[in-house]
Amino acid sequence: GQQLNQSPQSMFIQEGEDVSMNCTSSSIFNTWLWYKQEPGEGPVLLIALYKAGELTSNGRLTAQFGITRKDSFLNISASIPSDVGIYFCAGQEARAGGTSYGKLTFGQGTILTVHP
Amino acid sequence: ETGVTQTPRHLVMGMTNKKSLKCEQHLGHNAMYWYKQSAKKPLELMFVYSLEERVENNSVPSRFSPECPNSSHLFLHLHTLQPEDSALYLCASSRARGSSETQYFGPGTRLLVL
Image (cartoon, rainbow over all chains, first blue to last red; front, top):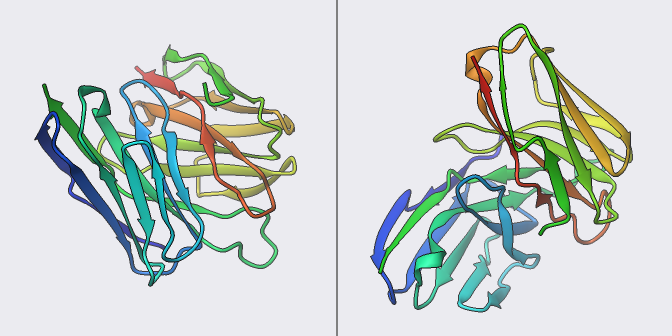
């Protein structure tokens, strides 16, 4: 099956610093998604990317869909304490013939800690 | 508020109990998913319902039994679980077809099996 490598596994940064994390895949995806999960909650969608090369921002967050369609990165600028959480990338396959949904493959997550 | 709700939020059960997890989505979606999230593991897809039909069952033990009575509701019936089934169970929904099939998650049910 699809494999996603997400790095780094964890980051400890000072408030105000910029953050960068990425995901790479052995296979091509049609969609890349970035989620954030806080303790005791489900993942919340941050950014969705639908085209190779697409660069999308959501406030201080910027994500890009790699040209090869096998990678994506997420940047957070000027981090603040509430950025703490686990960030997941997810790649969505093209729908295989006969199926009615696009399967998601998740990375292992990046645990972000921000020190005030 | 993502439009996907799950109840209960926390559940403790013994290995001989029978319980059910409930998920409801208010987004007008027609595909719903159950995931299991264990510590230090990627999310594991368990079941997928699309247009109220089960379209995926990822080798999940029969002690987990899903039910999708309509496109807004999804249940996961639990019986004779094992301690290793303790995890966060997440429900998600999406459109079944179209240009955007992005999945939106509920808050999860934290399950502890004693």
